[in-house]
Length: 184
Image (cartoon, rainbow, N blue to C red; front, side, top):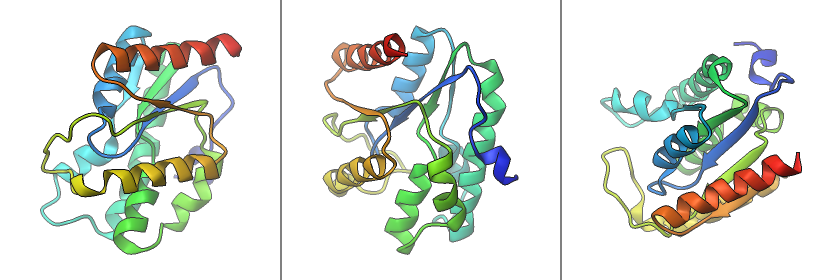
């Protein structure tokens, strides 16, 4: 994949990223928003990738997940109906690499400021933890929430914190997207 393929092309597609720590409902929210706005959502590439691993992810696996997420997003973008909903972004690769290896792949660091989303919905940790074999840190939710805030602030990203449970959470996400769309 070339540098130009990683950078955002100018297009009519509005990219909404649904991000946050583990077990905050990102996939469920992404599917809900895609149905609500009659568009597609890009699943988290890392989930499918990690389900196939028999050992903890390596440094190379993190790099592979970065490229896989970018490629999946690019593949699905033509199917979008004005909005492309993304279940997480490769910022996750940076956060996990920093946590597990003490540093991030240079490819990720170089791409982060060039591969922005129009709006980030940061899902709060106010939902109960749901066990999952691919989730590792139920005791570090506050830690990772602080990291998400910092990463988004460092990118000067346009983001909204979404909290609440059940219908209230979905209504808040829709309201944030609608406010964004009506401003632009």
